[in-house]
Image 1 (cartoon, helix red, strand yellow):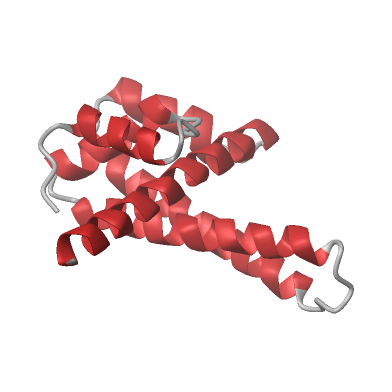
Image 2 (cartoon, helix red, strand yellow; image 1 turned 135 degrees about the vertical axis):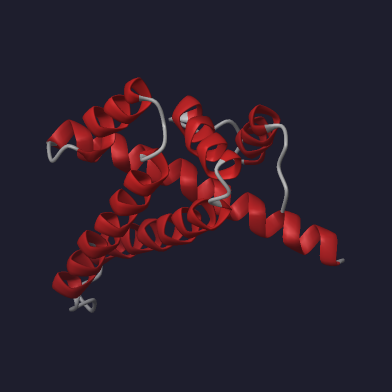
Length: 143
């Protein structure tokens, strides 16, 4: 999919999510970087992996009240590994950005701190909505 109006695209994602985006401006920055530097695949991979991580978080939450779920350590390990993938893809996207943007993303999402992880989880939420919206557009265009 070709996106020329990044802001409009992110606004569409926000509307699709029911205005639930938490890091809309930063999502816009990543989308702009991805599309303007011909790294669309990174945006799509971020969306896919984020949707997967959010699904794992949902399973983990449900497992707290369901004693039949016994592989929580495996789920936690999978979450950790995929969050690292997301961090790596964000690093790739910001590589060619200006210093201020790169520093901002490093300080807010890539540092290993509780705040950095909480920020990253909010961004993962927005990236999941991006994947859901792209899936919606694909289904809509094929029907």
